[in-house]
Amino acid sequence: MNKKYPDEFKQEAVRQVIEKGHSVPDVAKRLGISDKSLYYWVSKAKVPASQSAEQEEIRKLKVELKRVTEERNILKEAAEDSSQLCTKWRCLWQPTHHT
Image 1 (cartoon, rainbow, N blue to C red):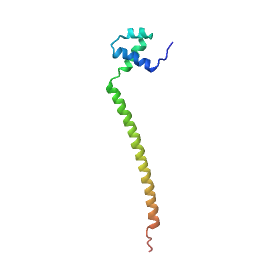
Image 2: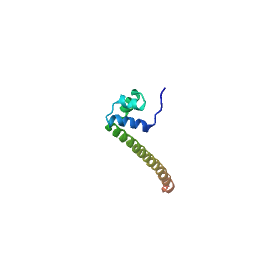
Image 3: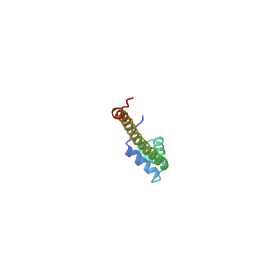
Image 4: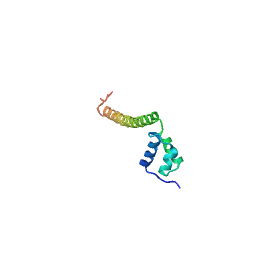
């Protein structure tokens, strides 16, 4: 049966292995969890910092791309509206040439 452990519990278990240097089997036994679960939590926690930094950079770039795309769409729409106004204005104010 799979148990759902709180994140704080998982973080503390991982900290005991990574920071304090205790073995996975010892920590797992003391906490009453399976070695397999603790090995999994530790492997997830050991994601290289560079990968985390890259993921954060990707997230920031996606946010910026969304903002810039929205700005472009607003400007594009404004340009189309002003183009239509100019066309209407020329029609209204353009001198007529009678031959």
